[in-house]
Image 1 (tube, rainbow, N blue to C red):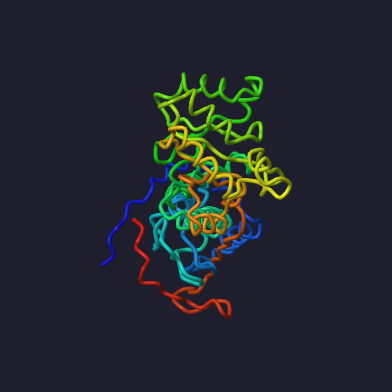
Image 2: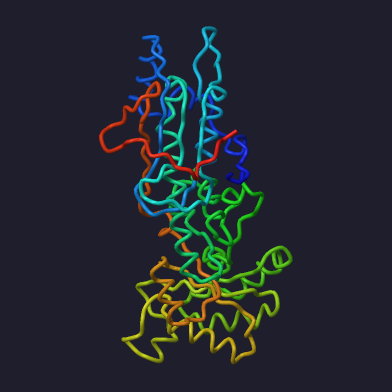
Length: 363
């Protein structure tokens, strides 16, 4: 017997229930399907199965279930809503489950008119959250236990932050950058002393870092970006000397179009650009030599799983990775098919019923 795992309460998602029920976010053809079946008095009992085509990690399943729980049903003659969840039978996998191509991740059984209008919404939810979860799980594995900081908020629309942050959290990210991303588990956003604050202090990284630490060191691990002047070694040493035990780490974020000044001084025009392994090694050795062995190094700027694997294979002394836009790139689309109708097989060719014993009944 499968052990029941807790699911997020549907209220966590703050769904726009009335609009979802009305089909506002649904493809028109699903709304038309519901309307036509109702007008014809046709109420087929169907089994819908949901799957995708990759080796992946399942995200968004609790949110998809919430859509079904809160938004299935039909309009009542008086303009109200008759809820349909109690008439449906839903089986599903859980958040963070590893899934294989074509594996059934959820089935929905019941009067099709009660949930035909919801397919767009629950499939889109699964696609987005699974994309993020799969990408984060991959970089977490590549980092071999080192913290991954989830930093893609600035690369996408703000309204996706809450669910994306939850997906990243389940997949193993150790920190997210906004309170919205952390809201579903009651956390807080974390971050570093940003370039904008340094600029507001006239480009003086040390001054900005001291002011930041003076206000926030008691409540967070202070990490400072040190590439503002493209002289990360000197800046890291200056910040470490000024902040002392208030400094948790320095963050290397050199642009991929620039070679850090310290490397240029040593190698000349052939100096590697961006956050190169050579730069990390140099910052680490100089911090250690100056008595700052406890200061961590966070590497960011264009990191993905492949690049992190290369750093780890070469034992580059990074303590944590900040990863941004690569975590929201790619696709992880889901499909839903009616495979049984009134107890008889009626699937599209190639989409036959594929029962999955891993599914658990959703109460």
